[in-house]
Image (cartoon, rainbow, N blue to C red; front, side):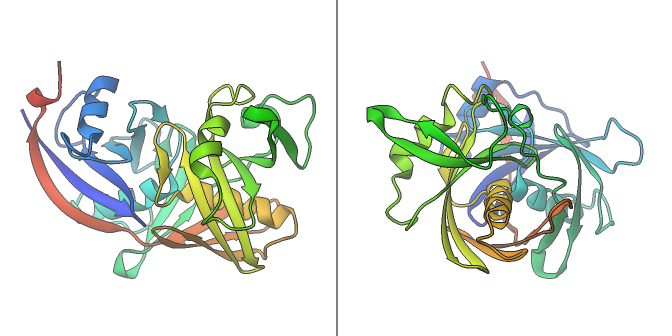
Length: 281
């Protein structure tokens, strides 16, 4: 069976996007892992599947799977690519959409030149909302690591869980060493995305993210939202801030008690067809 797909990215965070409205396919964890392989498959950070909605007054539903085959609740770069994808594939002529995800409804708005602005919803901070094991809510938590080391983290759920730590320099931060320890830490029962943020000034921060089930990526949209919100809550960042990642920049807006707005670019890399028999058992 030949399956049509589109390769896209948001700031280098790349996706295989599949329309399952006009065609059929089944993806299990092993198939996704094979497709995600950058030497023997298509190669991607996440697989993004577009489906008809289950709920009324919603335009589409989409599901996101990490390269390891695990399904995740939300993806900021993914929702921007999704908005561009359904428009380019002529699945809709709307530029403002309501989209069903595993973590609720998101509302992307397609702008000029492929930029997309997204209502990412309300951030959540309570330990049970992350989820994160803690005796009581605190502004910051000490997280014990290997070799008697520890880091100070903030926890934020932006549709998926994030742990944010402040570093003096993202270029020298030990993301490869600390990221896996945070991601699979026993205090995060569903694992977590580990963000390492450097504050440049109140309007500008740099960020690296070790993503759950993927590893470090060039960009993480929900990670940028979580980091910005964390910095704003600590009084380190203004309410409208630029978050700089390896793949580019995102603009994040948030007023305490309100929703988070994310604005950033997307890109279509290529379209293709593949024979799924080569990737399935």
